[in-house]
Length: 145
Image 1 (cartoon, rainbow, N blue to C red):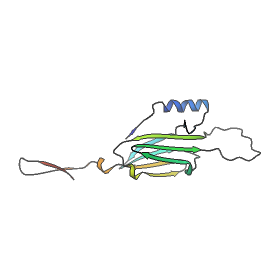
Image 2: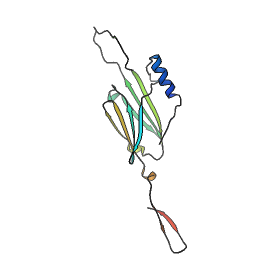
Image 3: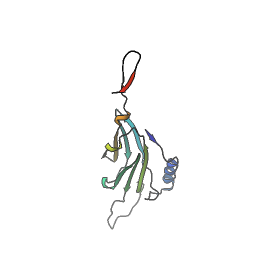
Image 4: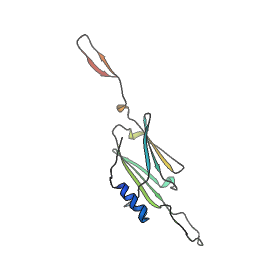
């Protein structure tokens, strides 16, 4: 149901981990995700720990789903000296090409415990259906229903 659009995304992620760089709006970091089908719904779960819900942007244009988020540094007082900073900050983004069989008009989004979950229903036209055969002897007409 999904097509990867950037074959170098994993290489970029590993480079960012090694160099300790954070994402920017022009070159965002990737976010880990799981994708699976649950009955008649396709589920995408994206890890965004520490991101405020108002810093998450979800767009669908044609069949391209784009999720962008920004994790900002927490405010610190005047007398605070940072000893260790390993949590990635900056901009995170993920683009997914959705199949035509998904109903992008009815995507539901939920954000809980640092996980953004998108639920995309399978389009009615993509669900299996029985084909009835009708007609007199020797003639068969196929109709959907």
